[in-house]
Length: 194
Image (tube, rainbow, N blue to C red; front, side, top):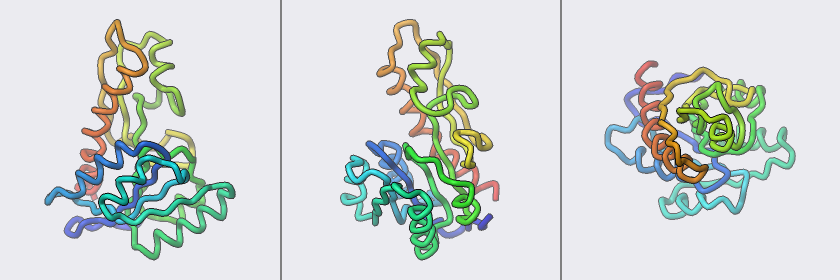
């Protein structure tokens, strides 16, 4: 695993597929004087991802890679990451599973944020599933990425009470707020622990 450097800002890539609210939050975080990261690149598998708008506004380089052929796409991404000397990847609503080969070849740190209290509700429709199962709590998790879906070592989790009148939309909003709080926390924690 490539060593992250505590003194300089660590070059970071964010991978997105959709609205990019966590991307926007990470960009804001990266602009703080005490932030250990600088976002140098955004990669999306979706050319219509709304999150790409933030990259234009903030003048951050972006690449759209369609993943029709995963092997070729990952090869292309690894080349770009290496050229830009990226040390940290933050997945933020990225709807593709990275291969074991990609993770090993990258050699840096890859993190993901997931809207459930893992190991519960891996994958999609987490809020709906939590509500259908009458869970009392839900939340979000930042974890290391492995080639198994939402299965890497947990770094930080935060939970939230599910109210009696909760629906998918209100729960999603509640958890998104938590996501924005804990993703930067997790990044600071892993870099401080190196």
